[in-house]
Image (cartoon, rainbow, N blue to C red; front, side, top):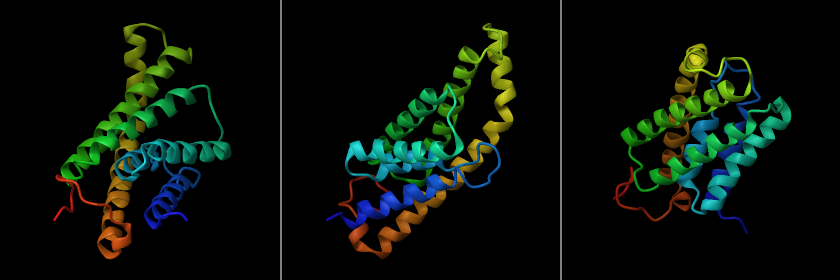
Length: 179
Protein backbone atom coordinates (compact mmCIF):
# COMPACT_ATOMS: atom_id res chain seq x y z
CA UNK A 1 0.00 0.00 0.00
CA UNK A 2 1.31 3.43 -0.93
CA UNK A 3 2.15 5.74 1.95
CA UNK A 4 -0.09 8.82 2.25
CA UNK A 5 2.91 11.19 2.14
CA UNK A 6 4.25 9.61 -1.07
CA UNK A 7 0.81 9.70 -2.68
CA UNK A 8 0.22 13.36 -1.81
CA UNK A 9 3.72 14.39 -2.94
CA UNK A 10 3.31 12.56 -6.24
CA UNK A 11 -0.10 14.12 -6.87
CA UNK A 12 1.27 17.59 -6.07
CA UNK A 13 4.15 17.11 -8.51
CA UNK A 14 1.87 15.83 -11.26
CA UNK A 15 -0.61 18.69 -10.72
CA UNK A 16 2.20 21.23 -10.79
CA UNK A 17 3.58 19.68 -13.98
CA UNK A 18 0.16 20.09 -15.60
CA UNK A 19 0.68 23.86 -15.42
CA UNK A 20 3.24 23.40 -18.18
CA UNK A 21 0.53 22.43 -20.67
CA UNK A 22 -1.95 25.07 -19.47
CA UNK A 23 -1.78 28.54 -21.06
CA UNK A 24 0.94 30.61 -19.40
CA UNK A 25 3.38 33.41 -20.18
CA UNK A 26 6.61 32.15 -21.78
CA UNK A 27 8.81 30.29 -19.27
CA UNK A 28 6.46 30.98 -16.34
CA UNK A 29 5.87 27.38 -15.28
CA UNK A 30 6.24 25.25 -12.18
CA UNK A 31 8.78 22.76 -13.50
CA UNK A 32 11.93 24.10 -11.80
CA UNK A 33 10.07 24.68 -8.53
CA UNK A 34 8.64 21.18 -8.57
CA UNK A 35 12.08 19.67 -9.23
CA UNK A 36 13.41 21.59 -6.23
CA UNK A 37 10.36 20.58 -4.17
CA UNK A 38 10.70 16.91 -5.12
CA UNK A 39 14.36 16.83 -4.15
CA UNK A 40 13.54 18.40 -0.80
CA UNK A 41 10.55 16.21 0.06
CA UNK A 42 10.71 12.71 -1.45
CA UNK A 43 12.39 10.41 1.05
CA UNK A 44 13.60 8.03 -1.66
CA UNK A 45 16.25 9.80 -3.76
CA UNK A 46 15.35 7.72 -6.81
CA UNK A 47 11.77 8.98 -6.63
CA UNK A 48 13.00 12.53 -6.02
CA UNK A 49 14.58 12.36 -9.48
CA UNK A 50 12.11 10.07 -11.23
CA UNK A 51 8.79 11.71 -10.36
CA UNK A 52 9.55 15.25 -11.62
CA UNK A 53 11.43 13.98 -14.67
CA UNK A 54 8.54 11.67 -15.57
CA UNK A 55 6.11 14.55 -15.02
CA UNK A 56 8.24 16.70 -17.32
CA UNK A 57 8.30 13.92 -19.91
CA UNK A 58 4.50 13.50 -19.75
CA UNK A 59 4.04 17.23 -20.32
CA UNK A 60 6.51 17.08 -23.21
CA UNK A 61 4.44 14.33 -24.81
CA UNK A 62 1.67 16.91 -25.07
CA UNK A 63 3.63 20.05 -25.98
CA UNK A 64 6.39 18.39 -27.98
CA UNK A 65 10.12 17.84 -27.86
CA UNK A 66 13.03 19.77 -29.35
CA UNK A 67 16.66 18.90 -29.78
CA UNK A 68 17.70 20.82 -26.67
CA UNK A 69 15.70 18.49 -24.43
CA UNK A 70 18.70 16.58 -23.02
CA UNK A 71 20.03 19.83 -21.54
CA UNK A 72 16.57 20.73 -20.20
CA UNK A 73 16.33 17.34 -18.47
CA UNK A 74 19.90 17.64 -17.18
CA UNK A 75 19.06 21.07 -15.76
CA UNK A 76 16.06 19.70 -13.91
CA UNK A 77 18.04 16.73 -12.58
CA UNK A 78 20.61 19.19 -11.23
CA UNK A 79 17.79 21.22 -9.66
CA UNK A 80 16.52 18.07 -7.94
CA UNK A 81 20.07 17.79 -6.56
CA UNK A 82 19.77 21.30 -5.14
CA UNK A 83 16.49 20.15 -3.58
CA UNK A 84 18.31 17.25 -1.93
CA UNK A 85 20.49 19.82 -0.19
CA UNK A 86 17.34 21.61 1.00
CA UNK A 87 16.24 18.51 2.91
CA UNK A 88 18.32 19.61 5.88
CA UNK A 89 18.12 23.34 5.15
CA UNK A 90 14.38 23.88 4.73
CA UNK A 91 14.20 27.51 5.82
CA UNK A 92 12.34 30.22 3.91
CA UNK A 93 15.42 32.28 3.00
CA UNK A 94 17.37 29.20 1.88
CA UNK A 95 14.42 27.96 -0.20
CA UNK A 96 14.21 31.38 -1.87
CA UNK A 97 17.96 31.36 -2.53
CA UNK A 98 17.87 27.81 -3.88
CA UNK A 99 14.96 28.78 -6.13
CA UNK A 100 16.84 31.76 -7.53
CA UNK A 101 19.95 29.60 -8.00
CA UNK A 102 17.81 27.04 -9.85
CA UNK A 103 16.47 29.73 -12.17
CA UNK A 104 20.00 30.90 -12.94
CA UNK A 105 21.23 27.34 -13.45
CA UNK A 106 18.44 26.57 -15.93
CA UNK A 107 18.98 29.88 -17.76
CA UNK A 108 22.74 29.39 -17.99
CA UNK A 109 22.67 25.77 -19.18
CA UNK A 110 19.78 25.95 -21.64
CA UNK A 111 20.98 29.14 -23.29
CA UNK A 112 24.52 27.80 -23.50
CA UNK A 113 22.97 24.84 -25.32
CA UNK A 114 21.05 27.14 -27.69
CA UNK A 115 24.26 29.02 -28.46
CA UNK A 116 26.31 25.86 -28.95
CA UNK A 117 23.87 23.72 -30.94
CA UNK A 118 21.16 25.79 -32.61
CA UNK A 119 23.23 27.61 -35.24
CA UNK A 120 21.31 30.80 -34.40
CA UNK A 121 24.36 32.54 -32.95
CA UNK A 122 27.98 32.80 -33.96
CA UNK A 123 30.18 30.53 -31.89
CA UNK A 124 32.10 33.44 -30.50
CA UNK A 125 32.04 35.32 -27.21
CA UNK A 126 29.90 37.98 -28.91
CA UNK A 127 27.50 35.28 -30.13
CA UNK A 128 27.24 33.82 -26.63
CA UNK A 129 26.58 37.27 -25.19
CA UNK A 130 23.92 37.91 -27.84
CA UNK A 131 22.25 34.60 -26.98
CA UNK A 132 22.07 35.42 -23.28
CA UNK A 133 20.87 38.98 -23.92
CA UNK A 134 18.11 37.71 -26.22
CA UNK A 135 16.96 35.32 -23.50
CA UNK A 136 16.78 37.91 -20.70
CA UNK A 137 13.02 38.61 -21.08
CA UNK A 138 12.34 34.90 -20.63
CA UNK A 139 14.61 34.79 -17.59
CA UNK A 140 12.47 37.35 -15.80
CA UNK A 141 9.40 35.17 -16.32
CA UNK A 142 11.32 32.10 -15.16
CA UNK A 143 12.35 33.76 -11.91
CA UNK A 144 8.82 35.02 -11.23
CA UNK A 145 7.29 31.63 -12.01
CA UNK A 146 9.90 29.70 -10.05
CA UNK A 147 9.48 31.90 -6.96
CA UNK A 148 5.68 31.81 -7.17
CA UNK A 149 5.49 28.05 -7.56
CA UNK A 150 8.18 27.40 -4.94
CA UNK A 151 6.15 29.45 -2.48
CA UNK A 152 2.98 27.58 -3.42
CA UNK A 153 4.59 24.12 -3.29
CA UNK A 154 6.80 24.50 -0.21
CA UNK A 155 4.35 26.69 1.68
CA UNK A 156 1.30 24.66 0.71
CA UNK A 157 2.87 21.37 1.69
CA UNK A 158 4.17 22.83 4.96
CA UNK A 159 0.59 23.80 5.79
CA UNK A 160 -0.59 20.29 4.90
CA UNK A 161 2.13 18.78 7.12
CA UNK A 162 1.01 20.95 10.01
CA UNK A 163 -2.63 19.95 9.54
CA UNK A 164 -2.18 16.25 8.78
CA UNK A 165 0.38 14.45 10.93
CA UNK A 166 0.42 11.45 8.56
CA UNK A 167 2.20 13.63 5.97
CA UNK A 168 5.08 14.53 8.27
CA UNK A 169 8.48 12.93 8.28
CA UNK A 170 10.76 12.85 11.31
CA UNK A 171 12.19 16.36 11.52
CA UNK A 172 15.84 16.93 10.86
CA UNK A 173 17.72 19.75 12.56
CA UNK A 174 17.64 22.96 10.56
CA UNK A 175 14.32 22.38 8.84
CA UNK A 176 11.62 24.99 8.74
CA UNK A 177 9.22 23.41 11.18
CA UNK A 178 11.51 21.52 13.54
CA UNK A 179 10.32 21.59 17.13
